[in-house]
Image (cartoon, rainbow, N blue to C red; front, side, top):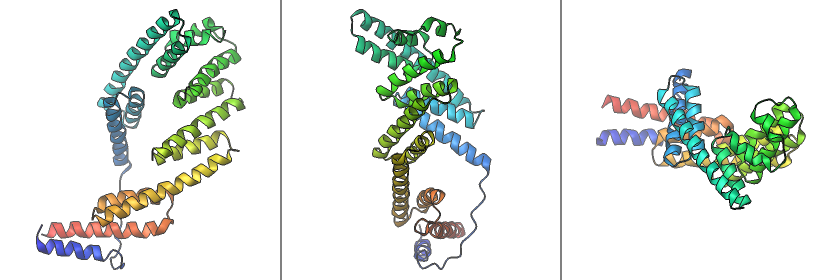
Length: 299
């Protein structure tokens, strides 16, 4: 970088806080570009999860990538690959549960069955084995001949509660929602779903996964409008999210990484346009970035 270029860039940065730069209109970003970026984000996350052997979450993200971009062959192959992997692992845990049952290790058997169903919720034999202890009429369910909605709802609820007790909240929510499809007015189930989302949000807050936590606290509130703690946690997490990304943006700006600063501040602006004059900061940062690019092109 030439000395003249360095001086020009330093001068442009100095104008940031004194407000001497005229804002430039942000370029238009097409919906198609946003869609492709989102699909790529889901796909890359799925690949990372697959490498970490988090196959359940990897499959979900491959599915999101494929839903966002239906012509994404890599995402489609990822779904097929994860489905095969999950079915094989589910069968492995189911076979392990049968051995544990023979040895009289019923608690360990139950855990293996729950793992099997988490990996492959449609594993009929695992469902049958888990439900047998509840003295339910499983055979009609296995043959898809249940006519009584209450019986089907009870089966789903029993499995959902088992998942909830085992702190497998994602799987619990899936099963509880099946209960609601059979019995939409089941208040107990709605409270369970709310609690499951709340627990997930609380865990994510401690892991600094603030956006996920916000989504889950909001879902918890949606299922239980009287959840005052949900309202409190939602507000607290929003404040944490905004402050975290605001400070991250300031750090990037001080390091002269304007692109990253803009990305961080845009996250804040989407949630609260009035937060610490974030709109003004963004306009000036984008102007500086454009001026720097113009200087580089002129060299």
